Image (cartoon, rainbow, N blue to C red; front, top):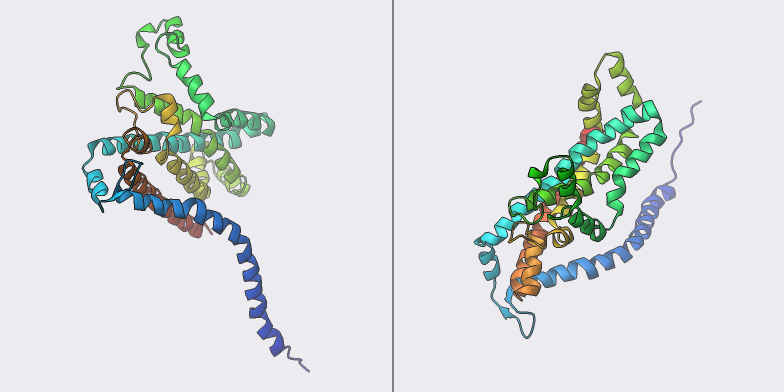
Length: 315
């Protein structure tokens, strides 16, 4: 004799009610962050958009001019030159550190940790991550001393080893300043991708590497065909965070070069600040800030979409 099991009707009706109550409970936890988001991000951003539609020197009553600041921005050669410098910083702060961090993470995880122990790999990882811990106000001043043209450590070292002809005014020469800033940014940024990639490597199935080794795959082929595809979601996270950091860079340029020499290292965030506080063209500075915010939002949406697709393909 078979017995049919059935869920009571009252219990079936109760489940959606319980689920709704649980979702409402979760929503309560979002209220504080929602209030902070509105007060700190959304309202100031909307006010910034409003100011960008005016001509205002920061004192008195703003004059409504519509989209004039934005049309001016489209034909502003100084803005587009600063935007090109920002693309260079994206390369220095996102693409190059991600590539170097990926290789270093694989070497520490797959070679150093196996031959010399996890403790050695951890010490090396901490050393590489150290620039991320230092306040850039401190690191930037130290780099300024090291790169000084007269008695900086770099030029003095070149002189000591017989390469005095290579001594340069690294931060004062318009042809070299941007590349010098890019070099410092690479040094600052490498630690973050390294930490993220090493965390990602912890979840890769070791049997993949073991099977590849049995088949005779070299280290480089294991890195290319196993490591990179397996940590692709972490790669998108690193590119997203570092690219956004590069696009809103201000303090690093301000401390190292003050936007100079001339305008050789000026970026949009610094150009916006100049219009706000030095030129007292508050409306135009707000327009620059609004455009950069929209660029960052679009870039974030694209990379998040790519990350979701990578996770779906990997699942």
